[in-house]
Image (cartoon, rainbow, N blue to C red; front, side, top):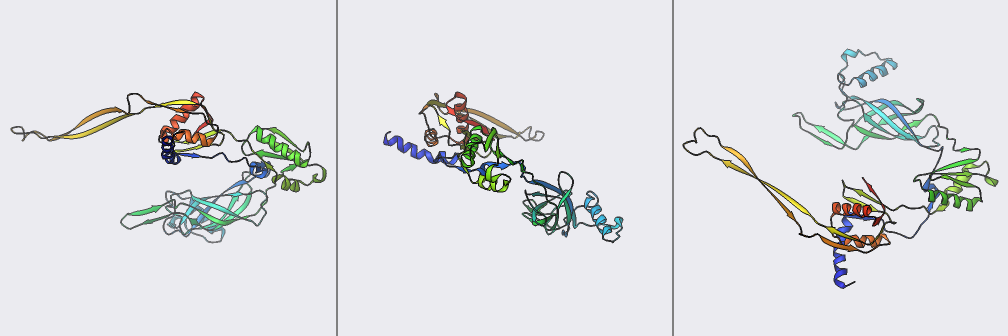
Length: 379
């Protein structure tokens, strides 16, 4: 390659770096089984509850258009032995909220959970609010945790008497770190008849078989079997029979080299293109041309002159001019040599010197022509 050609490529590489994010092919490395699989039966569970937030500085729910909080507060005060006339209730410092949390596997009673609180009425802000005790239910409608505490918000809202206001982020949703106490444990039957099932986070037949082979190599033949591209069954035997926790502890640290797919991810909204390390490019010629359409509108003022000036009306008439321009009469033809590594693909595409949208169109056309051996994923 001539010095001028190398210099041209070096000048164009920064342009490609700004629009083409690449995962350069690194030396093969192994991942641990715990990073590739989940244990079937050991899972998180979602909790949902309803509650009332108090202490709001006039930014709570309107008791007329959103009476949820007022009704809940009345029910709460009656349980506490306080009788309040509902007709005289004019509060704006309470708000009805939904409370959500995720309880991890093997969580014990007395442990703390982070909860998220979001307004379900017309409250303007939950800033400074305190969540009153709210039970959190699972999908079986049993109470598994109870939440309470002051809210932490990532936004704010301020409003003046004249009506002017300022708002940042979302002031109607917040979090309570460690605000829920677990009251009931969820059973996790992850081992049945000394059999543990592993679910791959990204299903692949090659990866599943490699995991089974690695487990059999460590614990002996017949220990693991790949049932399909997303499931591996492990049978504990010998000294580990009846000891599933010890089996999982040793199993999780086994190194496996996962299989990777050749993919190119294109996000048209952000102008980002990400390519995997197994992308390959066959020799191909690319012709690129452009058409530019320019529309200009110039307002023309029509002023009536005497003797019609007294009765005529001045009008503004837009004058439109449309022109079309092409970059070149004949699109330029660029020849790209075959590339067997992602670094070579990057260097080859950098010779085009195009923007993000043009590069995305070229990649899709290369895939259609069979020159780009990768799957195109649009987002």
